[in-house]
Image 1: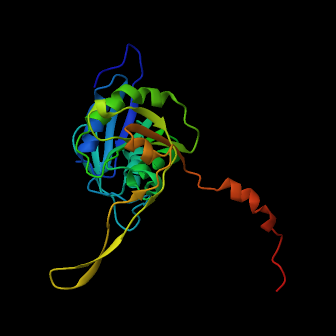
Image 2: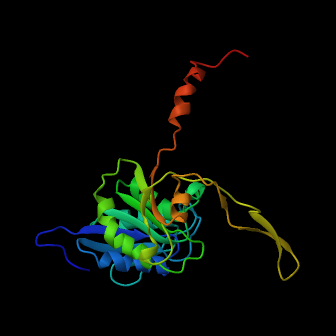
Length: 265
């Protein structure tokens, strides 16, 4: 880690993910942030793969903290568990200033943000009152994180300067490949996708049928300004998200349904 200037307080970055503490994307993010001036890092991530765990908490089994080297901890739980344990337990006397979740092995765009453990970890940071950011490499089989590392080094400080509103977070999807493949940055909205044959029928070695959730990859609606179309065109997509899921338009339209008491039968 490069120290900050004289008298400069280093920003404490909590890094988590949903691919697990041994994931290559997390390693790239950790090494990149440690190599930037003005930051210090603590890693608290799931002990194993937790993709598509959404914002689930572990309530039926104990959580365990496993030290994995200086400033590195694995937690036997979900991404949400890891951020909560980090803030409430591991870093209680040394709280973080920022939460970074990723770099995820694969995109987190459109409706998939609802399922995403990567986004959930960032959202938990937001709910704990911290500026939080989800970072993903937008390829189903990512091969080259060098462009993502370059984007983080060159552009993350500018992103962090933008003051996020209470209850908001940023979801960032970065094209796969070297830095020269990235054409720029776009602020986007969520796209929309359709999965085909999500549930497939399988047979185990004993001839017993079972179901497997996966199927073919999604097809996307091609709408200008969405996260998917921007990444497909070679741009980093930055999508602002909010924790509050209230549909405020319908909230106002439905006010006429309010009543005092129940109607007579």
